Image 1 (cartoon, rainbow, N blue to C red):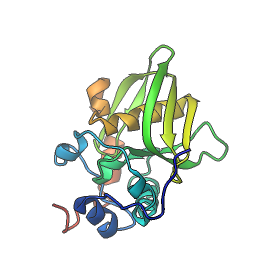
Image 2: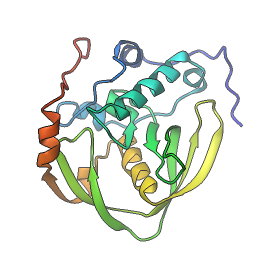
Image 3: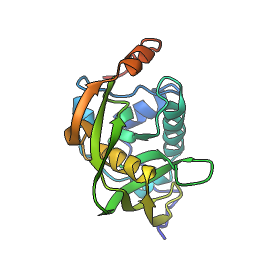
Length: 204
C-alpha cells in the first residue's frame, strides 16, 4: 500500500496546471503532426503530491468527458493526448460488466502474453486514419488507483489491445509506428467535419 499524505506538496508544472484548470470539460486533443512535441515525449510518473491534489480529480473528470463526448467517442485516452505527459490512461473495460471507463495511474505493462494477432485500430490523435496493427491478446499490467492503491492484474481480449495502444502513448509511440497498413477512413473524416477541433487561445 502506498501512503499518500494530504499535506504532500503538489509538483504539477505550470503548464500542467494551466491545461487542467483552463481546459473546457471537453479538452483539446493533441493531433499529429501539429502536436508532435507532446505526443512523442516520454511521460513521467505521478508523485504523492499529485496523487493527493484536487487537480488529479479534475484531470480525470475532464479526460472522461473528452473521451465520451460525441466529437471524440473513443475507447481509451492517454494523458499526453490532452497535453499532460504523465503516465495515466483511461480505458473502457470491455471485459467487465457494463464496460466501465476507468483511470490507471503510473501504469506499466509488465508482460505481453500470447502470439500477436492483427486487428483494426484508430487514434484520436491521428485522424482520420485507420490501420491494421499486430498486438498481443493478453497483458499483465501494474498501476495505481487514484487513491494510491497499487494493483497488478491480467487483462485479455479487446481491453488488452486498448491498454497496449494507450500505454504506447506514454512512451511517445503511435499506432502508426507499429501498423502493417494505414489508410484514410472516409466516414471518420466526414464525421469530423461537423465538430470544432481548434486549439484554445491559451494553448502555447
